[in-house]
Image (cartoon, rainbow, N blue to C red):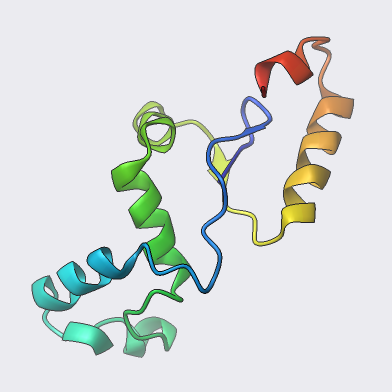
Length: 106
């Protein structure tokens, strides 16, 4: 997850094979009326660990930096590639007038 506001990653990626979202999946399958197929009509995806929206929900529920960003309205986006994060940081750093960019993200 990437912060567009401060130009730093908020957390490491949750890749497509990562099963840390399985508890979120199980919870939603039991809570939502359609169970595993609840979202199929709207986005053609079943509730599964592969679904990126559930990865975002997992981050929002379990990572303090992401929780804080959501609560404060910090502009964020998820990147799907490691190179995407590097590219976004480089672009942000070049556009920023701050000389403290590297220090902020370490």
